[in-house]
Image (cartoon, rainbow over the protein chains, first blue to last red):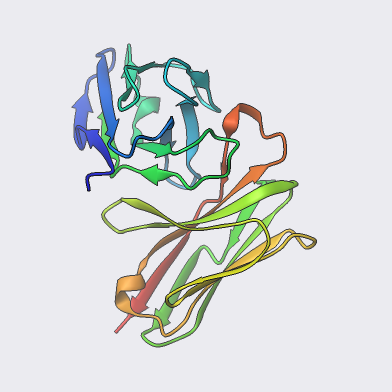
Length: 115
Length: 111
């Protein structure tokens, strides 16, 4: 079982470049999430999609956009990368919405460095 | 002050030892999660608690709602338990669907 698959696993960008982080889940989950993890800090929610066709801002949405392409896929886009966006990015999914207290299933992360 | 505090930040144990990791929180919650982050970076959900105690293999998680405190215990620890353990809470009326995450406890079990 693949679970939650993130691509790429590693990426180095120059300041001002754009890129899209891809996430796909094969568990037929309704809700998907994007987090960032920085040294010395807990995971922080960037955006989430409670169900197909909806997206909402999390704690740290500035500088990012998302697309819930279909029930399986949820992408995160950096339009103009900044060094402050250097981080490890995790995608997660859950069967029901964020208020249902279902466990979240995480991908392996994308390590992104912005020079 | 962080809404979710974990202690200790770092923990080194000898194989076979009983391990306790603590999580305290300052908000009213509907559920608390314990997660494990492997050295390679992957994150796995271990437990979700809203009351009492749960056990899975050598792992036991407890929660005291009145004291706003949870513990994760590992019995007969093994080097493969080495990982970062993360506590996260869902607060009542939590905005934006957020889980609030602790900073994690890094556990190293020596053979």
